[in-house]
Length: 99
Image 1 (cartoon, rainbow, N blue to C red):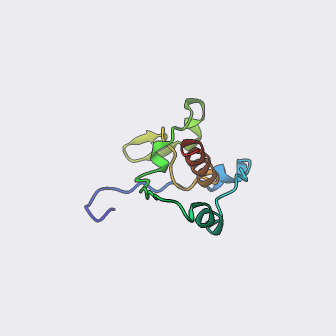
Image 2 (image 1 turned 90 degrees about the vertical axis):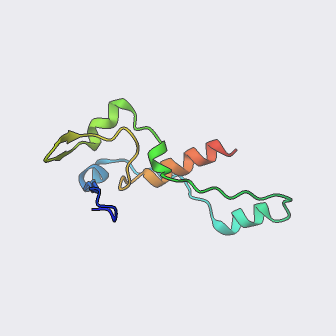
């Protein structure tokens, strides 16, 4: 449960992750990021609140994220934490959004 008493869903995606092709999209190297912004007149900082939850899981793949609870069977329509390629997918989306 969350601190506020709400139920926190935790899904074991190990089988899905083993069956997934690894996306080797590169994450930024912080030294290179800092070097790129050195000398800039302005710098913005953003907090990507619930960033993964902003990325849609394609409708044809949602069944792969299905899980069962005492209240029924559900599937994610937004990218959950725990998927092997979630980090790479999120980084690709950020690179697209900010370039």
